[in-house]
Length: 119
Image (cartoon, rainbow, N blue to C red):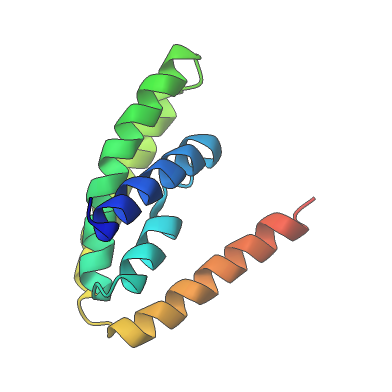
């Protein structure tokens, strides 16, 4: 089996566990993996969303069985997310991969600090 294929499947397993456990969606792990493998920022983000779609559907089914889904609020957040996703996809086209890596790192560190320090 090809090393890239094994990396993708193994990474998918890790992301699936992390996404279903934390609700973060997995992009915070998938995008750096794809950047490491040489993808452009734009292709890494787009490919990540396809993976997140598949992972999210699976996680939704599992959480639904445990009665951990509020469909009203989930759908309302999703409706807003549709608009935000269209804007974000167009904006990322104007950001060079090198700059994207720095912005992405700052966002991750900021989120980590917030979660760590929040009471």
